[in-house]
Amino acid sequence: MRIETHIIKDTKIAEVISDVNIINEIEDGIDLLGSLYYQGFDKIIIHEKNITPDFFDLKNGIAGEILQKFSTYRVRLAIVGDFSKYSSNSLKDFIFESNKGQHINFVSSCTEAVNILSNR
Image (cartoon, rainbow, N blue to C red; front, side):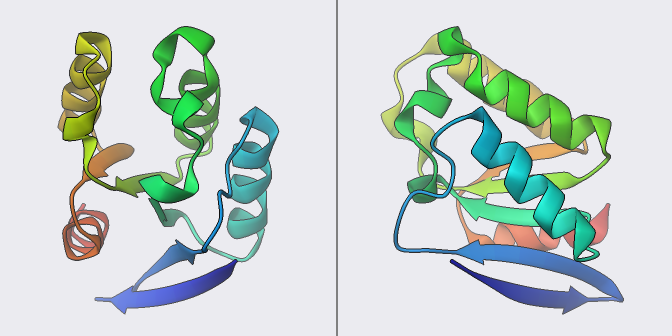
């Protein structure tokens, strides 16, 4: 895992780059949040491919637990990926509602993620 730093208009954004899953369980998400927050980042981009598919099954609570921590610590998160492959209506609704807010966004490209995190 490596961190690529984007600096836009004095805004520092961490993009997490990896060839393997970074978040497999709740503790992984919380550890990532703590590590990046300690390094001075309050805006983070992570790619869907680096998150366990279980995260996108809302019934097990992994997404809720992790995303609540990001909101509690006011760390903005953009998750980049193709979410159209998920058929769950509750997940689609969750993504729609999240994208209305300012803390958690689900986007289709890194460019979109950087723009959203640097403009709010």
